[in-house]
Length: 160
Image (cartoon, rainbow, N blue to C red):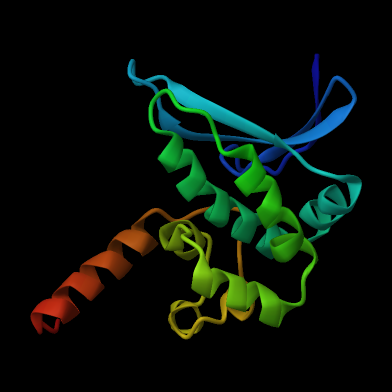
């Protein structure tokens, strides 16, 4: 039996559930071969839950880092739970400089952070923690679209 322990107003941000006495982060990502949404879960600890509850920015950073693992699972594969769990302490419990350094080494979903209000200039400078200071629970899907369109134009040398 699953009991929801923590959720945010936005239904897409990962939730924390208790399943058979164990805390788990659960998130929807991707779709199966029949285009049904896929749900992934992995274990977390009480310390992780405490940070997720109080720090939206760290919660969003974790989501951004786990999404590429969900993408790698494809339409039928399993989430690499060991890799997901290995992200917990370095993102949720480490100092901001260490989180920034981690994001230089891993794959992450930049669009997700931009949609939730990340400062694009700071993101591009590798300062992901500082970029998330103004993060919002509500996403703005147009913001990452505009960002990617601007980048493509810049690559072609076009300026609006």
